[in-house]
Image (cartoon, rainbow, N blue to C red; front, side, top):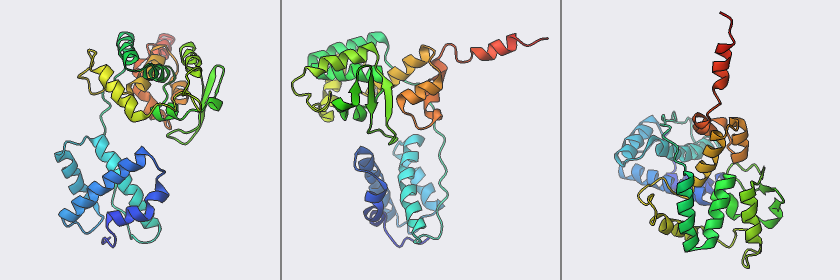
Length: 279
């Protein structure tokens, strides 16, 4: 498994083939660059288990969590698997996913959401409208920003550009429909309801609004918390986990199971079964 190519050579060869343009590709490129520099500095000449061990130790020294290390290794594995498939690597190192702790899911209470939306209104009404829509649909920010008016019909919207590359159509709540109706009259929203909002400006406005609330020092209160908020409220309302998975567009049920414990009734069937047993 001698390294006939540097990692950056593999990226130049396969990067555009394996990753579509976007933030995910940029992040993976940064991971590959980081690992490339480590290999050069430490004179690692082979793609083997010893390299994975050394990288794991280095990442942990930097304070990376197992989840972050897994993401970095996923990008490395993708490159090496392609190189192996093309006949340039005899064998692959043994990539094993490190255990990840399922921490507490952070979501907004109704009061926290109201306070944050109030401050977002002060920054820019467009930011508040987008945030309401995200909290009601559970959409990823990129999905919402790319919506076209043709994707929206009364009571429903279709997200075509999704992380899983699978379009999904969801019903709109009254609150989400209200946002859409409000935005239709906005002068700059010609192509889609939120396409006139640059994400960096929205993120900056979010941070300014957040700084004026009691959540100012909470690192988990980022725009993605609105997706967690939607999912958590669905679970708390007793919606079954499979429907939540479809609503959010999760590729696997395990991603949705983070919210299952919030459902007050999803385990009632267990007690009912025991109660109904004859003794």
